[in-house]
Image 1 (cartoon, rainbow, N blue to C red):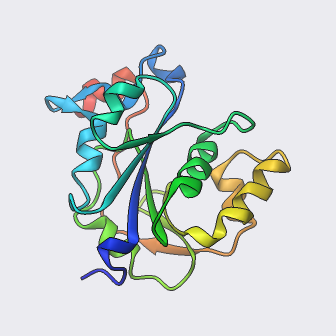
Image 2: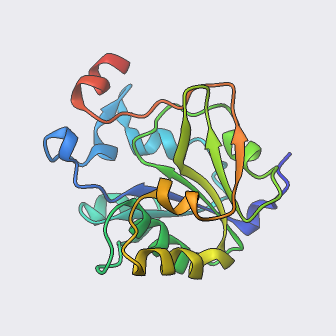
Length: 185
C-alpha cells in the first residue's frame, strides 16, 4: 500500500523531447507492442491518479490522455518539463516518468511513495534513473533556482539536492532509438 494517498499524488509524464536520437519523431507516440510508448507508461499508475503530460508538440494528441503542460521557454532539457509540471500540480506530491520508458517494475509508483524525503529517485540494477522521481511540490523553488543558474541536467540537480534513492530489483526499460524500439518490441 502507498504511503501517500492517491488524491495527494499527480503523475507527470515527460513527453517534451525533440526526438534527436529518433530522427525527430515524437518518441512517446511511437508504437511499442501495438500501442504508443506513453500509454504503457500511463498504465503503470492507477487511473484515479491525476495526470499531467509535459509536451511541446502534438499537444492535441497528448491532451486525450490528460492535462498538457508545456516547457517554460526560459529553460531547456527535461527539467524544464519537470518545473512546468511542478508549477501546474495541484497535489502535494508529483511522480515523474519519461514517456519513453514503457516497461517499469510492477507497482513502481508504490515503492517510490515509501520513502521519507521530499526528493526521491529510482535506481534499477544498472543505474540511477534520474528522471524517475517523486517530488514534494514544495521543492519547486529549489529546482527553479537551479535552472535559473543555467543548470539543465537531472543528474546535476540531484547532485546538489538532498535526495533519497529508492532501489528496484527490476530493470527500467527506456527506448531512445528506433533500433532499440525494434529490438525491444
